[in-house]
Image (tube, rainbow over the protein chains, first blue to last red):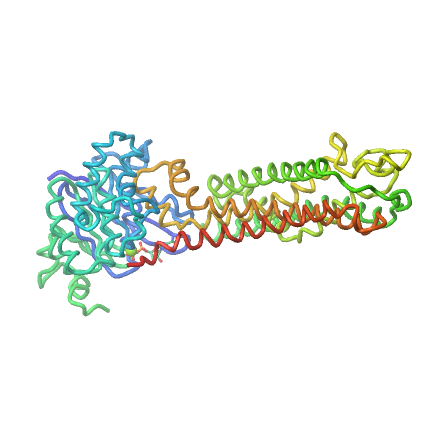
Length: 251
Length: 284
Ligand SMILES: Nc1ncnc2c1ncn2[C@@H]1O[C@H](COP(=O)(O)OP(=O)(O)O)[C@@H](O)[C@H]1O
Ligand SMILES: [Mg+2]
């Protein structure tokens, strides 16, 4: 199986605290990699490294290599191009203060797409994939920030899909969404898996169990274990800590 | 290594603060000199009555003050953008300018007013030779006295301009930076994550969001410039003319301008506070 992302000896420090310690693993193409672990274990940091937004955190320093399709991302000249290849959904919905339509059309426009008909089509497709189209199709020109929390989160997902990324990173996307909508989006993710590689950071272990091909367990910046989801969620994962965390008997 | 960096940062901060104080000293010395001269100023020559003002020179002055402060404000906004959006927080130029601005911006504008008054009304002799004002002394016979107004192309005029810049620019830099900072980091990060360039983030997100506050900032700075000039005229009336009538047109014009602008800027701030009803707490 082809490796989409290869991470080796990745280390991240925020001034004095270390967020990731010598983490190495690969992400296969077209898989859903579930990433689980308690808060503060470095999951968000990992995603920030992958789309190089960690560079905006002045106190952060990084070591090690991350390769996308075999190319070291730190040597890529076109950092905006890199970010367009990666879709990012943050834990709290961030509706850009633009209309719903413009929220989704932002990235394609920034990349140079001008044709109105193509944009319309793209916006509709992304909103449909994010299970939001039916609720907003009559008011695409209202402000994205006027939507409810759950709707805004789906808007964020639509936005992340709008630049047709190769890798989709979701960081605890279901925090602000009700269970029914979460289920609908999970269905969407399963179909998206055919087109892209998905990194699913989640604080709901059952979500990883439902969706992920493989699952990685992080704890305090260490990668404790990565294996196929069946093994991780079986009664005998390689590490006792993994078992304890999944079964809620942690610590 | 981390401990080292913190140490170095602290040292850098200390150095920039020391430099700031020296800078303040350099600026402060002439100010105190001027103030002393003001105290000893000869008021005799100026005590002749000035005639009522006509509208045209009055607007002339308003125009001068507005354009000077406009330039100073634009300069301040440009500085703030450069500091906040291009220089990293650890850059020593940024730290230095921010320290200067923090100190200058904290000085009440009345001090700048006093500085300007000192320059305006140093003493009758100086006034005449440098020609900062076309005052009573300029005309011999007293029947056709010209109104007091700014005179360009004199060194003192430039000092006055400098005073304005010293007053208005730090104020603008400080508040514009605050406006830029108020654009929430998640919005920036989300926009960057979409592959937007720095310039696109600024133009499409940061500037539209911060614009109202920046405008309000400019209005407020301009208002304090007008108020300071009104103060200068007020003191002129009080000190150098016989009755309160002579200069009062101008005084009232500037004061009401200042009042209008400051109310206007408060309204702007109020407006933008209600318009951007925070995106972190969705309404429905
Ligand atoms: N901007 C930051 N500045 C300093 N420390 C940070 C910053 N962001 C994260 N950290 C630290 O890095 C560690 C990992 O955080 P994070 O990646 O957010 O974990 P998670 O997403 O798993 O909760 C934590 O100890 C956290 O305190
Ligand atoms: Mg997190």
